[in-house]
Image (cartoon, rainbow, N blue to C red):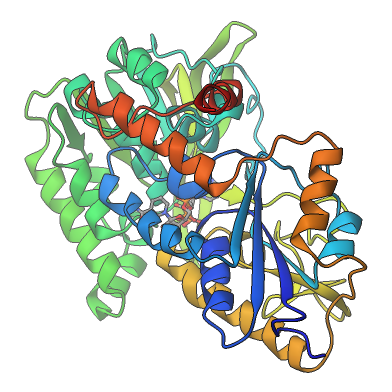
Length: 466
Ligand code: NAP
């Protein structure tokens, strides 16, 4: 009996319920085959970075979850929230119950700057701040010292832009979002007056996109300041901009110039954009950060033609009491799954997991999608073609008979295993109930939703339902 038919459905486990996981599920479920997709997440809530990463003041972007809900409404789809891969269920467990396993776990930690003082109190990866204001249960009890007047954000990516906006928005602006209630309270009492944005390269090499830098100049009570020395382009960058090949960079520079011209209009918070500077040391003690020593960089053309930063002998010390390092996310290794430490990804060939990134062999039955496949790049939509590519490899392997041969390939069997282990898994229907509660609680306050931030509270609300 061929696999993928009524009598023998193809059973696929997807680990992680963010965009890449949902696009993988969507592609599988639209095949002309009988495929059962079970999606696992260590949190009771789905949607990955759409819930835990996308900034609360970008509500429109979050409506993409409607597409994921449509996938989840397929009777061949099940969600097992609150189940951790490697702990509650292992690779060996899944190999006994599924023909294929798809890793869609994203990039869960941050890249380091590797400078002295990086671990001082007051120095945090932006990823932690983002997870905190988005009510991620793991970060719920974090405390960021917002009594500081002077804060720095390192990096010129869109995550840096998100962090800056959340630090600079007024309570009125934040109050219209689904930011975590405790974060809203903390930010209402914030003393932050100056936010230094520290970019190691120039305006023309910024990683943020046009709407994000434009938005920075449109906030209620924050001015963007770009010092004349920082907005000036070096000859290499000028040549690059004049060539017009990078339309995003051309527009970014144009917007930055407009912001530089507008300058200080007397708003409460100043966002000071500093280009061509790299932190070389964080200065402080066990009581916290006091200052950041930065070196001025110059750009040079590297062998591959890209413009790279190189330190000069000019230093500057900025008085800064809180710093967020927004220099990129990084993937983490999963138990019993190969990992390529250099890139922080699972080694793969078009999404087929390999034992090594170069010259390895295929790990039969294992597939990877999203940031843990290609690294932390691109917007939400980038994950769709990425997941489709991997799922097409899986379907090719199905045709070639190159999948796992589980002993007990049935829904009942896996659910029995979870029950035997007393794992309180949360179904999609239960999530929709929590979702409804969050929206109701938010509506009472004139907000899009009031998020649960503790797993225990979510489980309690579900227990109270029955
Ligand atoms: P990113 O776009 O890769 O930006 C990382 C930034 O960190 C770059 O400016 C990079 O500079 C800088 N950097 C790296 N190492 C550094 C170091 N050692 N010292 C100083 N600076 C350093 O990453 P991201 O901001 O984390 O965003 C991840 C992805 O999510 C991106 O594709 C982003 O567009 C996307 N995202 C999109 C949105 C949105 O659409 N609104 C929101 C959030 C995130 P160099 O260029 O010099 O390397």
